[in-house]
Image 1 (tube, rainbow, N blue to C red):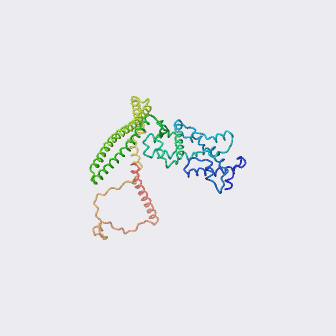
Image 2: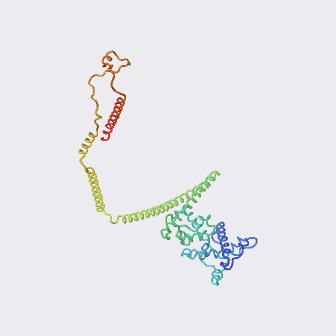
Image 3: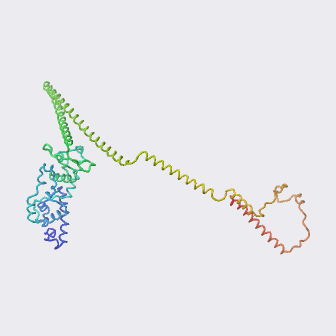
Length: 436
């Protein structure tokens, strides 16, 4: 803390670490201090009192404020109000318009010290207040009013801006952002906000002033009608009380007074309805004007988008597209017919395929002749009958002059021939499948 409360070196180049460390500590601390207090302005005298510790004050706060001013974190109040227009000048906000004499003298004399009373505006906090003020206006019932009096705005922003100076700075920031314009009408301060969806606020016009007068008259009439209603009810209650006390004549006078007040209230209520009707018509006319502007913009955009497009050109394009589609269909049909007619005739190919099938069928595949004599059904028992046994030829009783080697060769030949027949039948079965 002794290091942070000590003064800065005369030149930053002597010890830049010492210099930058103090700046980085005090700059965010000053901004947080102002945010906690709800203020957007600060001066050296206030900072010295706020950061006083054990009877001593920080010696480098003047250098910190100058550094923050150069970096744009704070700005002198007089410089912040340098872009004041005629509306702000007519308000006569002295703190925002006149450059303090002490700062001017110190600047002319070349002194680097900041006067204790010099007020600085914290830019980030002013922007926060301005955004909050605009959001509060658009969320309030007063958002339907094009113009607001300064007193109405003070009541609306009491929880955002604690004093009038903070409100003026927030309005000035909104004016820089083109969201607010100010005016002075018949000695009354008026503020106009930009509506939701608009990039910037429009100047105060005679229409805005006329609507403001009607809205003001509406408010006064409503207050007067409500007061007359309460007065009439009070007269009725007095008449009841006097009647209970037996003072009939006084009760009648109170009742007559109540009737006069009611008639007056009815007259004012009729005037109020007329004013409301005029305001409704104005609102409808503004809506109609916006609709007409939208129509005009739409017609202009449509005219630009259809520039050079005619019905004849559209029909010509459709005909060209149809011709191209027909040409493409003819090309596809020609290509398909050429693929089908290529090569030899399909009938000749089928004849050649049939002849190939006939040549590949072997002779062994010829089936035996179907027997014509009836075949006796199989017997259920394994014992042959006498007629079948007698029909069989007699068994020879002489010996066959065949050796064992000859029998083996005959058996081998039979085996080979059976194998060839079996293969031929299999190939005959496969050939029709291939032909199909």
